[in-house]
Image (cartoon, rainbow, N blue to C red; front, side, top):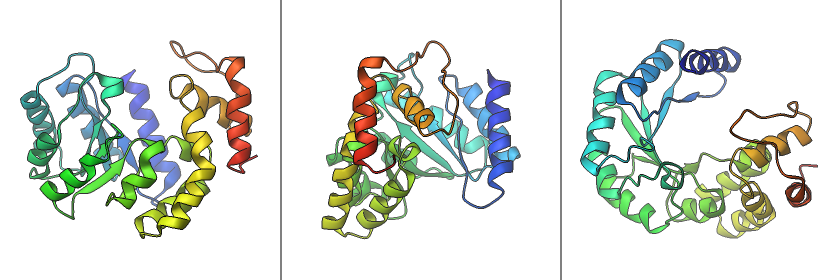
Length: 240
């Protein structure tokens, strides 16, 4: 529901109150809808927007370029591309990212393929000022050690301090310390995808007492068979 989506953006901006930057998710498979959500996020005071590739309708690379360019040209807020073909059935190739890096307002990409070779390619094509953010927790440490700038993480919802520390170490090039900390988080990286995200993450956050149980359809509450694995991973990560 677009109205609820907008209310959430506005409420988050109010609660954060300039303490940290707010990146609002405003992607859609309709260009007009994505443009309207992005414009609302700017009006609400978000610092940047994250726009996923259009899902289901599977645009061509030219269609992706035109989709993101139109939005960037229409709304003057920093925008981060989001490529997650496992969710969208649409893979935005590095050459398309490179073209879009030259568009005003497009400042980076969240790359969730887990293909570490893309880090080097996109960095070389787009330059050092273009943000390279991982969207795949299991490969995020190596992504950053290869030259990435950070991660937009599922695991961070359950183990925020540890993910912050691992990210700091990896982006500083401290390989041994980063990999050691990441090893403690590996169970979470994997178990939080035993069923479709955000099912395991919602259960884990509820297990920590931060939310009530329950999830909206078509998502369903985490199956009992997976709960011991998620809980074991939480203990390994020392969050419970």
